[in-house]
Structures are given as structure tokens and as C-alpha cells.
Length: 411
Image 1 (cartoon, rainbow, N blue to C red):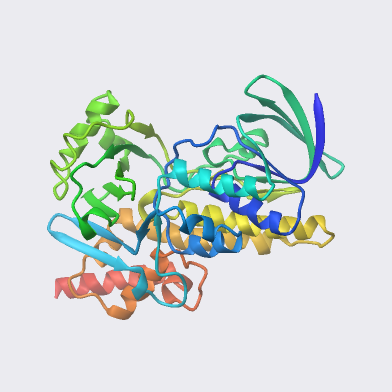
Image 2 (tube, rainbow, N blue to C red):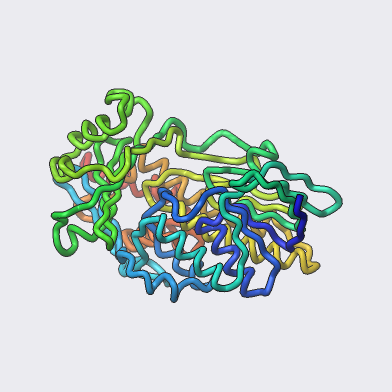
């Protein structure tokens, strides 16, 4: 068994792990990434939000990503029968990026790892973590590769960015009940040979099927489009048990997009994820931190997944590097509570989306421009800007605004 040592081991080479590694490479840290899959590999989370851009820039990826020609995303559109609510990121409250990308994650994630490899970061693909043991301030990680070869690597700190693999959550018994229950998703890709020109063929859109169920359309610059549904398990139960047939049946439930995608063959059999929300008991411990989906995932309705992944990956890398260089880090306040503040904001918006309150706010015929800018900033991912009242007082602000709208409707 080969044994070696690194300052920090990162589990997972998705956006969270890559951003952590990108930052650490710039500090000349000794880093190793362990990745269970071979890249490129499919992943959901194809719609980014502007806050991601700050993190990609700080981790040194921006030039590489700009050269790839991904579809730019300038906002988001929500559709409900004959009503449309559009948000333009250039018309948001506060500072920050006004655009981001819609990306095929297989190619996007590989562009990140290719960049890291060019910078000299070692990535061991198709390598599974078999066990983790923490002894006297050192982690010992046993791995096995695709050929069955076992290795051991020791390190001072583990950043777990394994996403749905949830490596440390499983090995250290950290799983906790999710905040959003009984929601599942089904999704596939198509090649649009007759995609509309301009806005209609470029803009991400969400069509509401009913209060708890919605459809996404995400067009990529390569002609591929991502289609998917999210809803409660009970909604999915009414369709065929065959995923391909079920997806066609679900498309007939749309109004705005009905008939547009029926004749396109699926690039792959529609995949289904049950109970998409995830949670953990705690996000850090002695010598480790959980980032991105390894820690928590709420719901894809506002595309917050990659934003939290990159925010937590970058912050964990900064704090871990300071810690192994002798600083005492208050992980509770500087990491867990910081990330949780952002999670709490988005949790309010996700819960009030499914309660119907936020949908009523979005589709109000005469929105207050200032309020709309403040909500737009949240949708852009700037959920740590406490100057924004829809961040600072998120739960009360949404409920009070809904109450005002409801009272106006009654009167």
C-alpha cells in the first residue's frame, strides 16, 4: 500500500472542491483531490447565479471559464399560465455581478479540473474513500482506485466536497433530517434542432405546473437543453413507472412549453432523484469541514446549489489554510454560522415559494421597483448582504409583503 502526505485533502472535484483547490494552489499549499468519478461526468446544478462569479474569480478560474463560450445568464423567468415574472440581475439591489452562466456541468466541471491540473494540482480520479480515521491531529484516509489498488494518504485537514456522495457524512454518521421533505426531481437533456432565436432560446425559465410542482428549461450554448421537473413525490406517483414514458406524460402538464419538446429524443434516459433536500448534524469538526451538497442542499428552484458549493468551498479552504499554519479558528462563527445565515435566507424563499406566498409576490401585476430589486439581489445569490432588508429580515419581510399584497387584493 502506497502512503503519502498532504497538508489538505479535498474529497470531490466538483465546483466546491475545485474552488477550494484553486484557492489553496495560489497559497502554495500541498493539496490532493480524491474524486470517485471519471471526468467528464454528468451532474445536475446547471444554472449558476452571479454570486458564483466572485468565488470563481478569487480561486483563479475566471479567464479559463470565460474562454469556454458558455451561455450567459442575465436573469431568470418564472411562468404561470398567462403570467410571466422576469428578474434582470442588472436591476438588483447592491453591488455584485450582473450575469453568470448556464452550463453543461460535465464540460464545465472538467474545465475546472483541467485548469487545476495545468496549475500542478494532483487529482486522483476514479478513487473511492474506503475509510477515514483521525488520530493525534492527523487524518489517515484509505482509498481504492478503479484497478483495485489501495493507497493511504495522511493530512492535517479534510475538506469534504463530495456532493451527493456525502463521504464524511456517511463515514462519521453526520446525516440529519432534511429541511424540505418529500420533493423529488426527474431530468434529461435534448438536442434542440429548432431552438428559437434570441431571448426565447437563451433564457432559463421555470414554468409552474401547480403550487408545489415546476418545470425547468435551461438552454446551453452548444445546442443542448436541460429539461426537468421538481415536485412532491405524490405528483410523480401518477405517471408511468418507466422514466422515459413518464417524462413525456409530464411534458403534457406544461402549458407554455406544451408540445415544444415532445418529438426530441432524450440524450439519456431521464434520471430521477428522490428526496433531493439534504442536511447534516454539523458542518465541521476537528480537522474537517463539509462544503456544498456534502453539508446541505435545499431545493433547485432558485439555483442556489453551486453558489453555496463555491461559497463554502472557498471559505473552508481559507480557514483550513490559516488553521494548519498555526491560527486558532472559530469555525462555529466564521464558518458554520456564516454559511447558515445564507442557508436561512434561501430556506425562507424556498419554503415561501412552496407555500405560494412568494409566487403571489413574483406575479403581482404592479410590483414595487425597490422591493423587486431587493428580491432580485437574493435570487442573484447575495444573501450575506445584510444591508438588504430582504436578507436582513428575510422571513418577516416576505410575510409582511405577502400580507400587504393579500390585503390589497381583498380590498
